[in-house]
Length: 442
Image 1 (cartoon, rainbow, N blue to C red):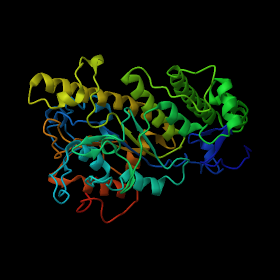
Image 2: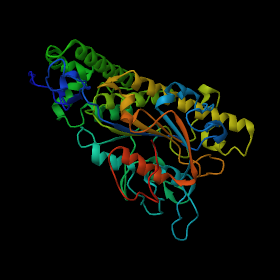
Image 3: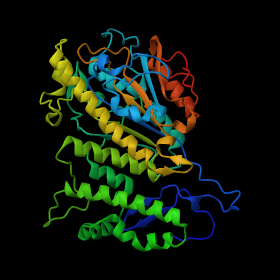
Image 4: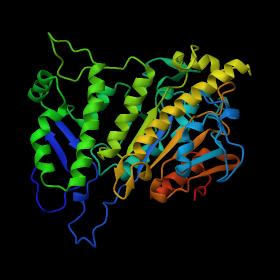
């Protein structure tokens, strides 16, 4: 990499031994101007979607008062410190006309599939393009990865899950086209490789990395030193902080990896952390790094797949999630489900805090992102696809007014909300799924 007095390109990448580490937004990426003219680098708008399975307990989720005076419900309490950059909604439905000769809706398969596509899954493998992929085609062309799809659970795509539907429907929320479901990566090691290298390195480079058993950053020290010598003190601090974050995530992944010393693999071995909490935090941190380094501007993340039977003994819920989501109005089961909802939101809140603490251009990463968080059904007991628990977190480059709880008219299509989100990103389409027109989000 050659450093000159010209402004650094936003696409500047440090490369060595198959690693490709993009840089955070630096002041040096702004064209040289006089002190009076100089302004912080303009930050791009990012998109994220975080999906939670098996619905929620609506009475513990939705606030009471509308508008800016709303009080945070028990499930959403961990997000209270982000009030000004939070739009909570209700009234959004995901109930389109059923396919000919089929039931009104297909429970779990519909929930996850329609979350971003607004298209009902068919018995053959067919749905529709999801809004994350629409955005990836528009805003993902300036980054190394147009998008990345992550999850905490794998799913056997060859099995049948929900009334004859493939498990693919409950194992992803991202679709590149009507017949192109995108796999969700649940292995943080594999996700790290996609973001930072080894995926396209030649065999010799990968073998050298395996012998090193160290950080990918070790092979970049010379390049990092040359870059730091050419930028300002604030940029040096920002770069050091970012690279240390990359190194920290890599260390945590390596702790979960078991290397075969006799026959080392050419690819970074798989490693899943022992606990759900460690796994979730690691996957959130990978998204944080991806945004910070501008590796991608579009992420999707499934905290759990539909039908998830995960247990949560760490919060006093040893019961499998899916069975107790059919709580039959039993107060004890409902309380346990509400604990799970609160726990998921708490982990999401930690992620938002990291985004808020990370400088980015004229603000923070949180200022420059819009993340949809929610579920594809309102509550699991009856698989109800009406009044979905949907919120948007992040400043969205001031394109969405936060600090509000908005009750849309009963029966408002979720697809209308999606049209409005696309519009905020400068993507204008006439129809998405069963949409009838965009909503007002400002």
